[in-house]
Length: 104
View 1: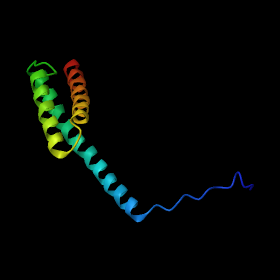
View 2: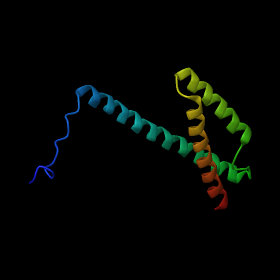
View 3: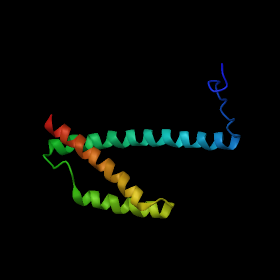
View 4: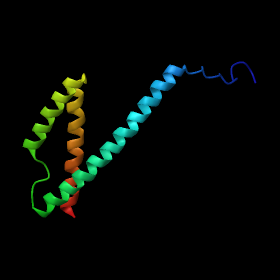
């Protein structure tokens, strides 16, 4: 091999960085599991709404949730705009699921 094509050894990752990344990986797994549980519940809500002929979205409830999560974010030191963007994404996805349930 020539010098230009020789593989470059990856630098060793410091132990503290490995530890921090491990904690992040654990939290990511927790987030996925919590979201899965949340969507199981919203699935049940969608089925109930379909049976009761209720609309897929509930703007009043959504606004309450956004306000509540913005407050929780502020208390936790998380950017409230980020929290609002996140919950808006989740709400849109839930409504999409509810629409699909209603169509079946």
